[in-house]
Amino acid sequence: MSISVVTKEDLQELKEYISESVTSILKEHLSNTVEEPDIVLLKSHQVQRMLKISPGTLQNMRVNGTLPFSKVGGVIFYDKQDILNIIEDNKQNV
Image (cartoon, one colour):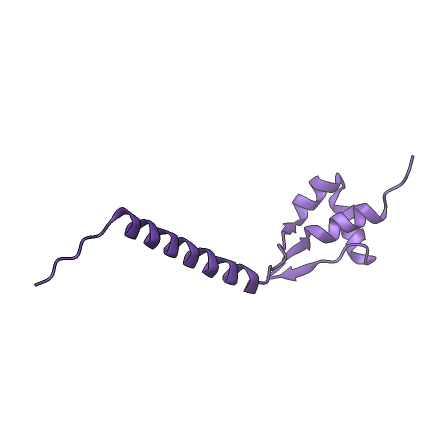
Protein backbone atom coordinates (compact mmCIF):
# COMPACT_ATOMS: atom_id res chain seq x y z
CA MET A 1 0.00 0.00 0.00
CA SER A 2 1.47 3.34 -1.08
CA ILE A 3 0.97 6.66 0.64
CA SER A 4 0.53 9.89 -1.36
CA VAL A 5 1.31 13.23 0.18
CA VAL A 6 -0.39 16.35 -1.15
CA THR A 7 1.73 19.45 -0.85
CA LYS A 8 0.80 23.13 -0.85
CA GLU A 9 2.27 23.39 -4.33
CA ASP A 10 -0.01 20.60 -5.56
CA LEU A 11 -3.04 22.41 -4.15
CA GLN A 12 -1.92 25.71 -5.71
CA GLU A 13 -1.56 24.02 -9.13
CA LEU A 14 -5.05 22.51 -8.76
CA LYS A 15 -6.48 25.90 -7.80
CA GLU A 16 -4.89 27.57 -10.84
CA TYR A 17 -6.10 24.80 -13.16
CA ILE A 18 -9.67 25.08 -11.88
CA SER A 19 -9.60 28.87 -12.09
CA GLU A 20 -8.34 28.82 -15.68
CA SER A 21 -10.91 26.20 -16.66
CA VAL A 22 -13.82 28.15 -15.18
CA THR A 23 -12.61 31.39 -16.79
CA SER A 24 -12.32 29.69 -20.16
CA ILE A 25 -15.79 28.18 -19.91
CA LEU A 26 -17.33 31.53 -18.89
CA LYS A 27 -15.62 33.40 -21.74
CA GLU A 28 -16.85 30.81 -24.25
CA HIS A 29 -20.38 30.94 -22.86
CA LEU A 30 -20.51 34.74 -22.86
CA SER A 31 -19.19 34.99 -26.41
CA ASN A 32 -21.88 32.58 -27.64
CA THR A 33 -24.69 34.40 -25.84
CA VAL A 34 -26.72 36.72 -28.04
CA GLU A 35 -28.20 39.52 -26.05
CA GLU A 36 -31.95 39.85 -26.42
CA PRO A 37 -33.22 43.41 -26.40
CA ASP A 38 -35.16 44.27 -23.30
CA ILE A 39 -38.75 44.93 -24.29
CA VAL A 40 -40.68 46.91 -21.75
CA LEU A 41 -44.42 46.96 -22.30
CA LEU A 42 -46.57 49.68 -20.80
CA LYS A 43 -50.33 49.88 -20.31
CA SER A 44 -52.40 52.90 -21.31
CA HIS A 45 -52.49 54.50 -17.87
CA GLN A 46 -48.70 54.28 -17.63
CA VAL A 47 -48.28 55.96 -21.02
CA GLN A 48 -50.74 58.69 -20.03
CA ARG A 49 -48.72 59.43 -16.90
CA MET A 50 -45.44 59.26 -18.80
CA LEU A 51 -46.56 61.70 -21.49
CA LYS A 52 -48.94 63.69 -19.25
CA ILE A 53 -51.82 63.25 -21.70
CA SER A 54 -55.51 62.41 -21.37
CA PRO A 55 -57.12 59.11 -22.38
CA GLY A 56 -58.65 60.85 -25.40
CA THR A 57 -55.29 62.14 -26.60
CA LEU A 58 -53.81 58.67 -26.25
CA GLN A 59 -56.68 57.22 -28.27
CA ASN A 60 -56.15 59.86 -30.98
CA MET A 61 -52.46 58.91 -31.13
CA ARG A 62 -53.45 55.26 -31.64
CA VAL A 63 -56.09 56.07 -34.26
CA ASN A 64 -53.89 58.36 -36.37
CA GLY A 65 -50.94 55.92 -36.20
CA THR A 66 -48.64 58.15 -34.15
CA LEU A 67 -48.20 55.55 -31.45
CA PRO A 68 -47.88 51.83 -32.31
CA PHE A 69 -49.67 49.45 -29.94
CA SER A 70 -50.70 45.83 -29.46
CA LYS A 71 -53.99 44.64 -28.12
CA VAL A 72 -54.06 41.35 -26.23
CA GLY A 73 -57.27 40.15 -24.62
CA GLY A 74 -58.74 43.64 -24.53
CA VAL A 75 -55.65 45.19 -22.93
CA ILE A 76 -53.60 47.65 -24.97
CA PHE A 77 -49.83 47.54 -24.64
CA TYR A 78 -47.20 50.01 -25.86
CA ASP A 79 -43.49 49.41 -26.29
CA LYS A 80 -41.59 51.87 -24.10
CA GLN A 81 -38.88 52.25 -26.75
CA ASP A 82 -41.51 53.38 -29.30
CA ILE A 83 -42.64 56.09 -26.90
CA LEU A 84 -39.07 57.21 -26.24
CA ASN A 85 -38.44 57.32 -30.01
CA ILE A 86 -41.51 59.53 -30.53
CA ILE A 87 -40.30 61.89 -27.80
CA GLU A 88 -36.84 62.02 -29.41
CA ASP A 89 -38.29 62.59 -32.92
CA ASN A 90 -40.40 65.50 -31.67
CA LYS A 91 -37.62 67.16 -29.69
CA GLN A 92 -37.32 70.86 -30.44
CA ASN A 93 -34.58 73.38 -29.80
CA VAL A 94 -36.09 76.26 -27.91
